[in-house]
Image (tube, rainbow, N blue to C red):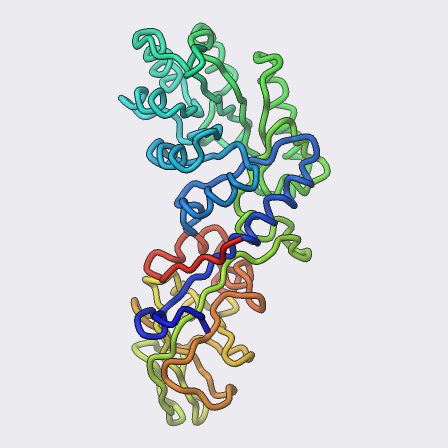
Amino acid sequence: MPSDHILSYEAGTVLTVDLEALVANWRSLQAVCGEAECGAVVKADAYGLGLGPVVTALAAAGCKTFFVGHVFEGRDVRTLAPEATIYVLNGLRPRTGHIFADHALRPVLCSVPDMEDFGQFCATSGRRWPDGSKLKAGLHLDIGLNRLGLGPYDLERADHLAPLFDVTLVLGELARTEDICRAERQIEVFDRMRERFPGCPASIANSAALFRDETPLYDLVRAGYALYGGNPVPGRANPMRPVVKLEAQIIALRILEPGARVGDSPGWRAGGPRRIAMIAAGLGDGIPAAFTDNPRAAGGIAIVQGKPCPYVGTIGMDHSVLDVTDATYLERGEWVELIGKRLQIDDFAARAGRSGPEVLVHLGRRCYRRYQKI
């Protein structure tokens, strides 16, 4: 049960973020990186866990480089980590060059128009880095995913633009697959393309790639999901410490007669007398509808008094229903564990047939967030 007294009266769901575990995960990843630097991906409000507390904790622990998705996120990180290096992964949006200059942010340029816009801004604005040097940027190289990124021909077309700013990092993105041959081909393409930028730091590895022996770490690793407790080595024991705990209050209890349904779900009927509990967590709190309506998924469970209890019926916007027949005596107002040490984020996601990052970023939008300090 959450220890904050006021929560027992006001909060239906509580998301606890263990900042000590977060920092421990970053330090563990940095140890695996060896001589490479371990940066932190904090886009999407630090994967939904709160940009302010997460960046503050990581910066205090020694993290020097942060990656965000959008320029406004970079501006927020700059206020939290004044000395950090901050890359904006979605590149340069039109008419935003001055924001990058004002806050010493580095766009990760991912197309020829990106390079043209940034080069023109650098050439016409007269803006410089605080130390008087040219403005800085990263370059995203497309190594086979056909999403964001510059191809070999793009680099030739934009070759005249590169001298207008300092290229401080070249990035690639590996496919999320265990296909070693494909990864090796991508790395070969990356190495050929980055020959245009001799001596420039490089980055290709994310959390998962960090644990693959065949992936070179280069100069900088972009750690994301694993920082927040996600398993970077699926199929093996998770080397990361759990960072999130999600709890919800029981708001009502009742007994069902055999054959009774819950809500408007046609897929579940009570096979005998059952006891159910309504909890104050639903779609609005990040509980996946697929917990009960995806026949190909295992189905959701919560931990009630140490026992796994399944979700039944349709997941509502504000509440869900658990079959708590196997639990001992329960009362309205008690707390149940939806994510924690016994049911970690990857297990929670797998039971809905979803990816861990997808589920993680949808938690906490309405939950009361509680941070365990270092």
